[in-house]
Image 1 (cartoon, rainbow, N blue to C red):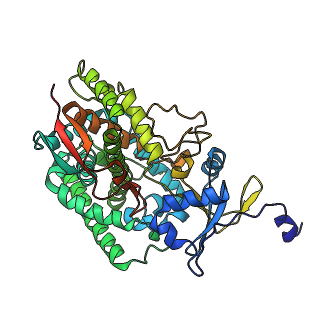
Image 2: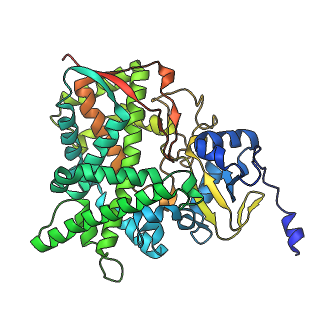
Image 3: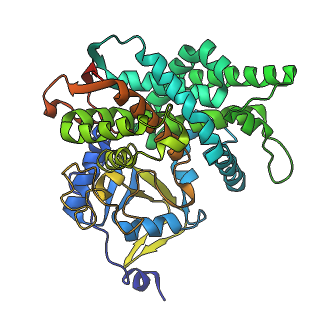
Amino acid sequence: MSQSSDASRYRPIPFVSGAVPGRGHFEEFCAHPAFFLQRAFRECGEVCEFDQGGMRTVLMVGPEAHEAVFRAPDEQLSAPAAYQYMVPIFGPGVQYGAPIEIERQQLKMHAKGLRAERLTYYAPIVAREVEDWISGWGDEGEMDFYEAFADLTIKTSTHCLLGAEFRYSLTDEFARHYHDLGEAADAAGTVDHTRQKAVYDRRDRARKALGELIIERIHRRRNAGETHDDLLQVYMDATLLDGSHLSDEQVAGMVVWFMFAGHHTSANTAAWTLVELARYPDFGREVTAEVDQLFATETELSFRALRKLPLMEGFIREILRAHPPLNALCRRVMQDFHYKDYCIEAGKNVMLSPYVAHRLPQYFPDPERFDPHRPEPENVFAYIPFGGGQRKCVGNAFALLQVKTIFGTLLKEFEFELAGPPGEYREIMPSLILRPSDPCVLRYRRRKH
């Protein structure tokens, strides 16, 4: 069969309007990826194509499309090829900078560190961090809670991953470097991760400094013959299939990778959770009553106790539907990819968007209504805040544990209200993470028991 006759078997993929000559949709995508992708879907439907600054990208929407992408083999749809801009952040030899067979083994190391018995150990650590945080609040006040949660989750993640000594000696320095890494993970970097020289120079300096801090701790443990009950120890002790250990540089990269995945998700989800608890006070009172009921029989927020908060879990699940942190899940097409009667040629990207997917009314009725009692959709590929398949976000269990523990502790002691009108708290995307608008100020008041 000739190439032209073979091509005639497939429908042309609709192309999104508004492309700028020589730039395509690059500026509109970078300004707010979630809003652009929503416009593209509304205009063109479940499959459409746009020009991401020279990279032709095909947006695919809906559970059937999600499943097709998540089940495709890496040899056909490659995550590493699409996410090379993350290699300078995580480092060579780790995740997208490692051969695929090594990356798969590294994912299993993460999974080992996040088994239920490990999460049991982390829950009290997070609770203590929150208690220390609120001990200096006084009875009432105002705070920019986006920045506050970003700081808190760096502390909790550092404490759980690297231990108390690291947490209390180097947290501020660690947080500063992590901020510089986060600024480099923006929409423009998906096309050219060397374009913004000043931002990427800071990224590289921060990554080098983080690596040195973590490796210094590795050497200190080894020289002292110490072992600790944290994720750093899991990575240090882990072996690859050939019996070898990760190098010190790879261990440092594993820490950066996990913290990057978990920290941003936790901080943004926590900020949105507080905004919506205050914006919908009736729901807030329901969740607070559940926390009170828990503490009537429990003395601490253990991992076991957190399972007794189904209303809070439903509230956080709805937060992740309405405000999913990640909104552009990408794969590079390595071999022509056929979906229904479309052919997506090798060399293009395919993209899924949780923000768009979670607003499909056939799976989420009245999708613009915030409803923490909303039932989960029957199709498991309809709800994808953490992606899906073998590349589902590795930090999701830890992120959920952090957010539940944070609010179990906060709501026991304080009530919250918006400091500005409800419409002031908007969705912005200065990076690839969907966050509340800046500043995100709320009032707090100590509860009267």
